[in-house]
Each structure stands twice: as C-alpha cells, then as structure tokens.
Image 1 (tube, rainbow, N blue to C red):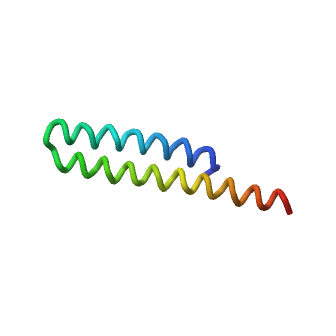
Image 2 (image 1 turned 45 degrees about the vertical axis):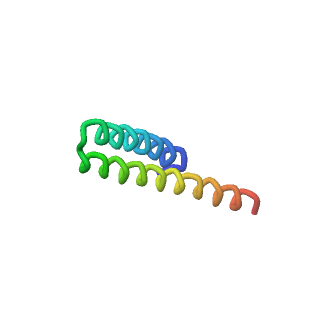
Length: 63
C-alpha cells in the first residue's frame, strides 16, 4: 500500500471512529463508543505508517 493510501484510509478510519464515538455517547451505548475509540486509534496508526513511509522514501531518494 502506498503512503498516500495509508494516510487516506487512516483519515477515513479516524473520522468514522470519531462519529461512532460521538454517536455512542449520544445514545448511551458504551460499546459503540469504545468501538469508535478503537477505530480512531486504528486511523491514527494508519496515518503514522503513511508518514513513516514518506520519511523513508525521502531518505532513500537522497542516497
């Protein structure tokens, strides 16, 4: 997967997680809220992978 794909999927997962977290809070569903927190974390991790790939590519391009 490319770094751009990782970052895009990460942003989408983070946004979906925030929505689920908010919906869970609004309707009093702690399971949905926890699911949202986990999905948000997954999205943040995916974005970090994409950024790391970019950093590695920059180093390789300099060599």
